Amino acid sequence: MGTEQFASYDFPDHPDSWERKGIRALGRFITELELIDEAGRHILWNARRHRKGLGPLTNATRTEVESLTRHLNRPIAIRFIIGASLFFIAALLSLLNLGSVFTQSLTYFIGSIFFTLAAYLQYVQSINNSDDIHLQWVSRPWRWWAWQPDRMDFWVVFSQFVGTIFFNFNTFDAFLSQTLGAELIGIGMPDLAGSILFLISGTFGVVEFNHHIIFWPRRSLQSSITIVNFWGCILFMGSAILTLVVFLSPSEWSALTSVGMTAAGALAFFTSSMLMLFEK
Image (cartoon, rainbow, N blue to C red; front, side, top):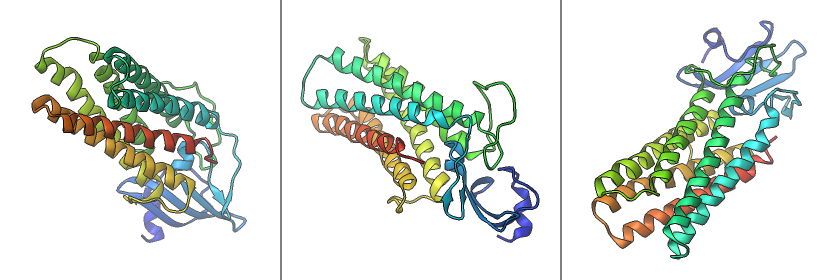
């Protein structure tokens, strides 16, 4: 892409005197920007690093920025770790036929609450980030809700947040004694909708850092986080599809495989969330 085309991308904000040397984007969504500042330093801006409040790389060195939202990274990761752990435990109890159905359902439900808390914090982090390339804050009230469809980071966090709400309904409805049709609508369909939204979020998350869909991580912590999370989304999607199969045509194989995929997906989310604790 020639430098004359870079002007059409307004995000992130940076001094007009800086030279844009390269850009990576998916359609209108910018994922990475290479610039040269007035001092001749090479500035590498990445959409995921910006979303996490971490700042760009300057001459391949991390830039220490005092962003408003950086402090949320650890609380977000811890809540995802707890949610993933509870999903894994609930799935393991089911596979080993341990504990009552109520205990398993309650563990899933509490896990889904932690997923939602983490996803909402992640959403709040994204919408409150400054547009400035160094995340310099412009004084304004803290936002708890915003609609930013022209930014990729918004779709990464918003689709995941809405997906967790579907899982709240899915896991809560498991407490209720219902007919097959009601279970299909109250449990199976929210599970499928939540998994689709997770997969959308995971796909955008891969592109956000890696610039296109890849299935194996490059040699970086952030790439590993996005790919492991992506595989967790794929496993949840497979589990949701098999759950519908179980409702429509029950079999022990499909039921066990569905729960097994939930356990594997939760383990992937646990791993990616643990890695988030070390993201700098």
